[in-house]
Length: 299
Image (tube, rainbow, N blue to C red; front, side, top):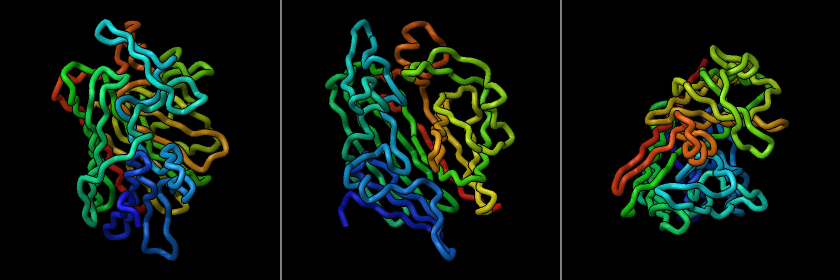
């Protein structure tokens, strides 16, 4: 087995990681029954061979979540132009980490640490990103850190992008106050109060709801419940993850509930004077931390 492939086990829980596929989680499953139950969408062998983190179970968003429209933003009186990373799509998506090979810093039966460094290149500063995975008790904890390793300030954000299994009876419970409406190209156009059709407070079947939107004012907690399985996963976020992206595309067997620190296209929204979009600014040596916990519960 490749040194880039890591399997963590604790009790009935098993998590697979791939350092060479964007530092991603490629599976999270519950063992112990007549057959394993995938809690997150498992990556296929072809996905891993292609190093395509976008089709894994969960991948890191660094140094920003979602897209930078037009691939450019201004910071400190200078314009920066980012390279597209998903051609032919013109808007750079989710930063650099998901396309990179990560270094395995350490690993044990239940823990692993992956790290990735980026030189300044097309970004205001160099940085290092570290993911610490811990499988304990009834769930997985990912502690995600971003450190400015350069000599000047940098705007940034962090996020994690889990793909939860979505059988027909899936119930989502997440409370949020606002949501961004998008133009056809994905550019956030207006922030409104969450309409009834997108309100999942208290729990509501997902059904055929289609979403790819950034919500704000959430309480950093969400549950994904599968009544027929007798299971739920409780997601909690710690740190400045004031936004959550919910992605439920048509005809797919997954739903994404992504804790993120910045709204979509936040760098440019902030420059236009839009408030509460979550742009973090790290001075040299400073660290931004996001923690996501996925606890498995029987119901």
